[in-house]
Length: 376
Ligand code: C5P
Image (cartoon, rainbow, N blue to C red):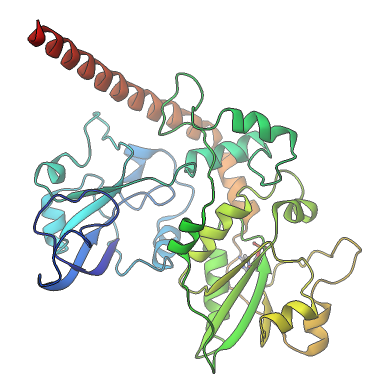
């Protein structure tokens, strides 16, 4: 995918990190659109996946559509090569490419960004701690609830004891960790826009677990209901979702779901921990014009009542057809079906990463010895 940013060009070539050179040069420097190339699998790959990453969970079209719905994406290059070359950057007039600070290797164990790194057209940003596809798959397969945000849960302590360390002898990139929400993170993801006069304020509620194209299609259809939509998504807390969905749902906790939903271009605002029933107070508070639900089942509230009774009474409840039958459960089913392939993929990935870590360690030790000998 390509991100167009209006940043001053950084001629120093010194910036590495997330600011992408925006602060590194003086205001008088010429301004033009910076085109940033970000390739990746985005949930099991947009590129030549099978050889490098294991079984795909989503089809190619599903993944393209999903990435298109991310609000920071300007263009998509379909079928991008797995290894990023200067030729690719030039072909798509990209100034540089950006990747997270984990290592990506080809089947023969080579760094996929070797060429662009050498030429100075590579920038790195910190990977979001604790959010990895591998971890999510683990939650689905192991049926744990440790990721839920209810701290009193017995699994939680065990999980936090492990926080930051990762299982012994495992790669720090592929290992299990836990995501910690911060206000900074929310600020980075939020639109910061308040509703403007004339906007249609549309409220939708749900779990939005493993945020997927079914959700995207629904939210797109919802936003099409008005020329000036202001879409508020009410996210139910983990315990609430677990009450009506059972098993170990939600797979993503409310903090993770908040960021996935905020990243969607059709969403203006998120209510973190919305009440299950859409009450009169909530409708008045947000000055809601319209409440929408897709064609999926509406689970009753704890006391058996209809959570949409109030908007129904006011005549502002709309059923929106997403024309997409994908559900969170079907994604979990796809993953369970691919379970053995995933496990094999993970073991291979960790083994490769461990080999890199060992090599890095050995290099450091050799350097240390050389330094010690030089002193003597
Ligand atoms: O199931 P969940 O609570 O995540 O759904 C959130 C909203 O997205 C609901 O209104 C649901 O009907 C809608 N949806 C949809 N089409 C899908 C999946 C969800 O319209 N394929």
